[in-house]
Amino acid sequence: MRAKYICLEGTEGVGKTTQTKNLVQYLEEKGFKVLQTKEPGTPLSPLTMQLRGIMLDAQYENEMTVPARELVSQAIRSIHLQNIVKPALDEYDFIIQDRGILSGLAYGAACGNDSDWLNSLACEVNHVNDNYTQMYDSVIYLTGDVSKGLEIAKNSKQEFEAGDAMEAKGDSFMLKVADNMNEFSKHFNTSKICVDGKNIDEVFQEILISLNLG
Image (cartoon, rainbow, N blue to C red; front, side, top):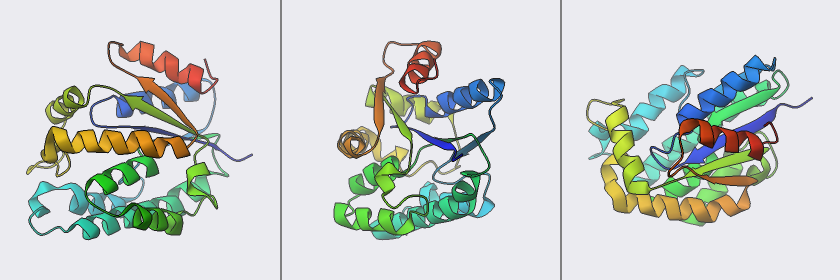
């Protein structure tokens, strides 16, 4: 049987990573074989983590161009899908992923890339399904206050000494990302969950219900 491929999406600070871990733990405790992964860059592929640094480390911002960053992002996705996800579809019961193509489209467009070009690249690097919008069995799209989420993200992690290039673009950029994500999410099998005013357990219960696991 093909693994169920579930991707958790959303802008900064909405709890994607926390809920990804919660879902993996829940499924493993139920006896399922689960692969936990993420984009852009996964520890399962050291090369993608090196490329992630080039893509997101603010120390490269003065040299990085808009199309160059997008091409690095697509290189990460190609390696990840071909070498990690595709083999896992036949080896696991579930693949649970923190971020994916929806984020790629939303951030890529907010950075100034043409949507048609982003679509063509997404089609080109997809090694899992003929239609990339149908690649995931489910997309859990977490939404919330964008400004608050960005502040949470900045205060909770310091991945790069020089800072994160996307987070440094500020609230107005993240609002564009959120608008793009709202639009692009319509093309995926998406369950939208607002996290505002809810604790971690409440959001997780909604995730389980959305996936028919609760």
